[in-house]
Length: 137
Length: 254
Image 1 (cartoon, chains in turn brown, blue):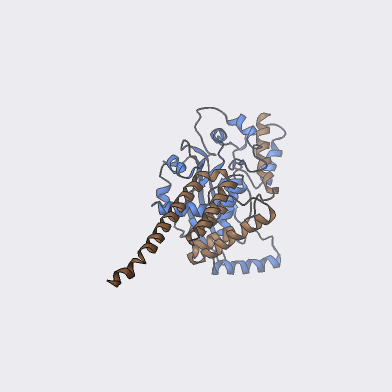
Image 2 (cartoon, rainbow over the protein chains, first blue to last red):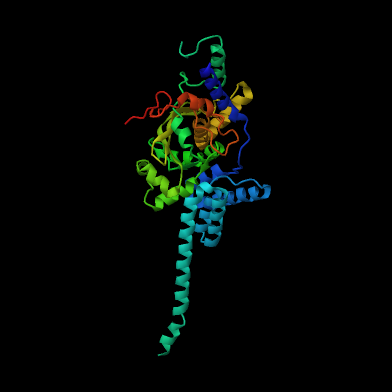
């Protein structure tokens, strides 16, 4: 009898999901991710798709699918939008505690990058006025 | 008698199985006890290993793996971000990533489990108007705590864009048009999507005739039915020290 219950439970599980409503909205996620693999220059479309998913989720109050905010943040990072990238990583960490370790690593690394950039900028600013001083001699 | 059923209800189950699109001939549930014990909530999918001659097959599978896993109730690490981070770390070769230590890899990302997808073979058969593709693939979920296998499945799928037609002239025209499109620009994204859904959730989402196994990945914590598939399984498979085995015939070659 027990075997029967187990088998039936399995069958219910096998069929049960068929009527389940999707947990998240994915938009063109799969097609555009594949599109980017096929044509690296279409990375912009993938990034735009991620942005639309996030926007729709914000509008409807639905939770963004796992990884989408992290992936979007990485796109921002590659575009050089470091502060926005960090904000997106933080949002992923807040929505999905499972991402804590990875998001912390990414946030720390991007912050380091920003600090290094700032030092570079300051050094560039500091050396600029020195240049005319040399030419005066 | 192939099926280990006795009694008057046997035929009902057999009928149910047939209705579901035919389960594996022998209903031997794999050992889910370690899966239940570890109860993973997050999954890191490493780049897909393509052991077939089909160029670009790995991309099809990687692009369509996130949705079925997330819809199964798991946190899925962003596959593209993971792929790029691994490449930055000198781990761009999937063959190499698949042999690195699962526990060490898992720690880097803070994941509970790591999913390894391998495309075993890919055979295209060209018929007059259309192409039939037979693909074999394997999925293995390993614990990021111990490196042990939590779940494994292997499938073979026949993919034929014309298969779903029900007959009639309209369908015939559709078939011809479809065949023309398929010839001109073959896209195997639906194939990979179907394969991923079938392996993870035993769910049919499109064309293709997979070998159905009713032993998908257990439902994860974010799914409303979380836990519903674990009660009977725990009673059935809980036996400490027993090695994890997949469905029959899935034992991995050394």
